[in-house]
Image (tube, rainbow over all chains, first blue to last red; front, side, top):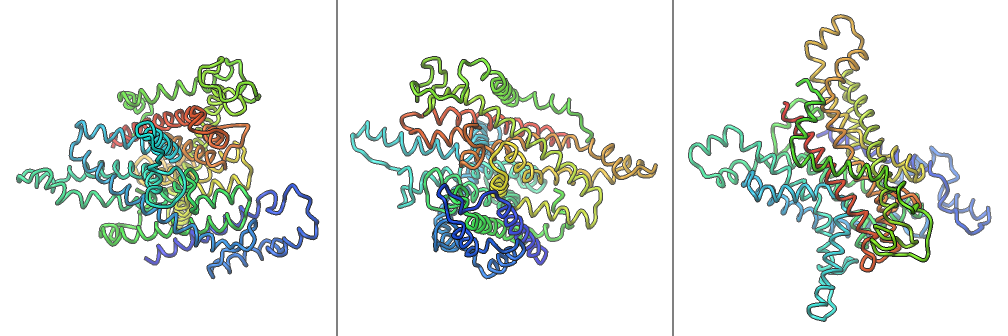
Length: 320
Length: 281
């Protein structure tokens, strides 16, 4: 436990420091613009944002503020602090993320289960093809396709049939349940495939173990064996990758939010990169990484609680 | 346990799916290399008389975009950039990961512990964020994108090679070499790494699609390759910016289609390689 906490802190420190160095090495300044600005104004701005101080002093000050939870203020939008943006945008991203995680887990587990129950039958092959495709396609491909089909084509179809203009699924925005459906599916698709694939292969492994063969031999039917005995153990490997999966959902949401114009963290991240809004990029990166690393650590701990073998095993968790 | 690349490739090519994937990739690669040279259009010059032409009109097989640029040429030029970045980044990741993992496993003890903690820390950071930061710091050239992907993507290879090294270094032939007075580096390059070939090859095959994935996502967000140069991701991004998906769907869907089949083929091949390696153990 203590070790995990230590590695959590080390990772966060590493991230903050690296990010800070990167951002400060960037060419140009956020105050560069096409307009001629008086040098005095520029230097006043630099003083206001502390950019005239030596590098290590900026670093120390940033770290101090960070520990207090202050991520600084935006360099482009006056009087807008990074924390206020996070406060506004994170709930939206979280909402989208939770929906996607739930959907991905539910559908993924269902598909994995079905394909393991029907190994090498038609159902299995179809599901394998679906998971292969959904794992392969980048989020923006899925997002664009779904937006085109479910938002544009579907309303065109409805118009052609009923002559009523009606968007079942609005193509942008984040208001009301209908607008959340397509982004959630798009975001969940990739992870759903991974979950299905993992569950299928781990169920297959478990089904070959002696105690399963034994219960089959004593006459329990397959369904019973799968649900009573195999499933529990087959879910464990999934728990071990749930950290990386959640982090891929978070990164995926950056893309999906941009496609569907959802006002979440990802939108702000991309636009602040384009604006060269240093403090904003720095703050949002640090915050996203914090969330990801936190979730990784929590699932690690959870894994150790659920599976006692992890605790007894030698420290060589990395070698796998 | 010992591994020959030839037999693995042979095992892989027993699968029809792998064949299909390989053929698709070869066709795309050949087109990427050759197609732009055989087209009368150059992919950069604007032609205001023929903007948003539909595919197969006026000699533009894939139609034209918002500036009247020929999409056939632009898509294959995009293929060049996307594939070149993916492959180069994966190769560099392989080299870094192999050396790092090999060293970590070979030295063992505290060195190993520290090196793997660092790799773990790097692994837990979402690569998109790191890549964005690096490309921000270095500009949006192909070089900086490759560098950024290489810096972030090597950890999985390192883990695999380290695991294999830990196992190999306890084996008799390595001990014998040690007993004869072979140095650490000699053992690493002569005995350990050659016996990691299988693992290294498989992780290379898995790294290519993830590099292509990362690059196209980055460019799609407008944070990767900058116009007028264009990877597939950039083409889709530009398509969204300048054209309307309902009126000019081909501008967006053509590059999207090629990304999709490339990614699927790469993943199928990677999967088959992994299976071939796993079945050996």
